[in-house]
Each structure stands twice: as C-alpha cells, then as structure tokens.
Image (cartoon, rainbow, N blue to C red; front, side):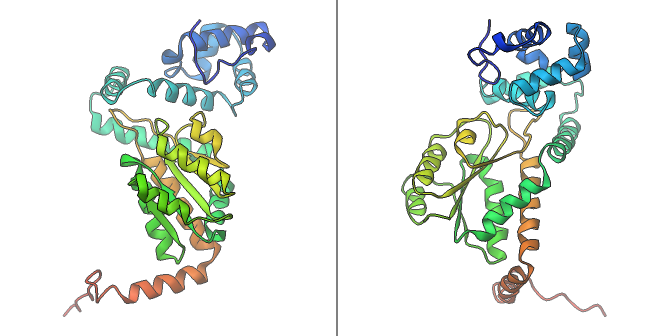
Length: 288
C-alpha cells in the first residue's frame, strides 16, 4: 500500500467502518486519479454513499472531501519538479488553450477561496496586524510578491509592516528586532523552505505571533504557525498560481483599513502630500 502523509497515519484503518476502509484504501493507491473525481463520481465508482466519503474526510481531520482532495493534490505536486508539474497539468486538461485554461483555473481558485476561508479568519489576521507593534513578512522566490503587496499597503496606512526576502543576515537582523507580541507572517507555497521554518522556530521561542499564508495545511510550517490561511494555487503550467493568494492579501488590506480608518487616512494623507514632489502623481491637466 502506498504512503501518503496527508491521510496515512498509524492506526487509521483500524478505526474505520468497512465502507470507509474501502474508500480509504482507494485514496492511498490512487491519489493522482482522485484529483479528477467529483464526490459523486467517487461514491459511484466505489459503490458507497456520498455521506460515507464525507464522514471519512472528517474522520481524517478535514472539513469535507473538497479539502481532503485539495491536500492530496498538493502533496502529489510537492513530489514533482516544475517541468514535471507542467507535464502533469497539460495531460489532465481538455482545453488546449493554456491562456483560457489558466483564467478558468484562477476563477475556480477564487471560488474555492471564498468557500473555504471564513471572513472572520481574514479579519482576525488583520486585527493581529493592527494590534502588533511591528509585523515582519518573509518569503522566498516569486511567492514574495504578495508579501510585498501586504507590506506596501499596510505601511501606507501607517503600520510598521516590513518585508524581507533576502534571507541570511538580513533576515536575522529583522527577526532580532521583533519583541513579544509582534507578528511574523510567512508566505509559503508548494514546499517548505528552510529559512522560513527557522524564522518561525525563532519567533515561537520569543513569544512572537506567527501566521502562514500558503496552499496547504500539511506543510511543516503550517503545523508550527499559530494561524494558517490557505489559498488554492492550482495552475495549468509549471508554477503555483498566486491569484487566490493575492486576493486573500487584498481582502486583508481592506480589513486593516476598516479596523482603524482614522489612522489609515491620516497616514495615507501624509504620504500622498509627498507624491507631487517625488514625481509619483502629477497634477491632472485641466481640460480646456
């Protein structure tokens, strides 16, 4: 029987009913195929009820089959190099137009984000930013783009939200500047990154709050963080799509603004006064 850390835990099979065990064994042996099956299709193929699969999903620690299937898919993708991911995704898509296919996939990712991430979780994340003396956002590679967005707009609203992606001594210096009650935000998609894991470990030792934005609760960094916000990252090519992750960050920025509009407006007004002198925003020409 194949190993799958998403669902394969010691003693799991022993506590399942006969029909649940049938589904469980199928999931272990067919993690790639499961990604392309709906709940109803899987139930029909295994001759079990939809409720049996839902109960199994919850028994394994998930909210439902959708979350279980997504985590199995992410676990499989973590075993592939970028070009192998492209081959896998190309082979599974009917639409030969990769441009249109990606737009459709991102729409699906956004819909899943709305369905699976409660608004209260996003507001709670924003409250941590508003309450913290300082927030440090860290990431690696292209995933840092959404971290830059979060830092940039929060600083515009008057919050000390810093972004660090260089690692090494630069990250060490920023971490050393955090004190208990501050906030560390890690942006972690696809696989665990050693610098981010080390940063979370250091933060936990110093009683610093930790939040991870990523695409899986099964990453090691997710299990070590106080709060995890999951944004679907499925794509049609060799990369993880950050559209849903970007939407999640923009929603957080909106919440930060609303939690203390007076502070945000004061800070934004001071920054905006400097725009003309810095050539950022020239006065509009009057129409004749």
